[in-house]
Length: 106
Image (cartoon, rainbow, N blue to C red; front, side):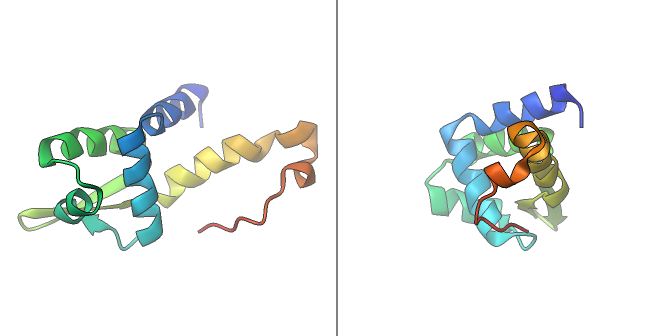
C-alpha cells in the first residue's frame, strides 16, 4: 500500500464520529449493520452519518452492500489489515517482538 493511501486512512479515522463508526463496525465484523442501525446506536443523524460513511469507504476501511432500499456497512478486512501491516511492518527497527501486544484481530 502506498503512503498516500495510509494517510487517507489515518485522516478518515482522525475524527471522533468516524472512529466510533469504525469501532462499531469492527465489533460486527463482516456481518455489518444497516445505516439506520448505526445511526441509532451512535445517535448520529442520517445526513451526517452518510458523510462519515463516505469518508470511511473512500479510505477503504469499510464497504457497503445494497439490500433493496437499504444499505449495510461492514468492516473491509483487507483495508484494515493493510493499515495494521503498515503500523507494524518496521516496528522497533525490525524487532517486532518489542511491539507485540496481546491483541488478536480478525
